[in-house]
Length: 77
Image (cartoon, rainbow, N blue to C red; front, side, top):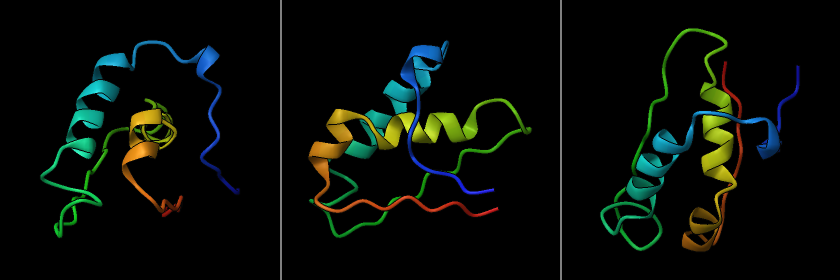
């Protein structure tokens, strides 16, 4: 089934702490577009606990959008 990076923020509960921690990591100067380093974040867990939703929230975050010139969404299963 196809997936996209679109997420309805109105129906998301309880992911604020995780999203903030991941955003701090992604927008830090140690990784990302302003660095020559490539960071990898693994989000693992049982099915149905919100891993993809968390990734979508981070992907669509305004600070993350401002940090990178180019982004891409890929689903690997």
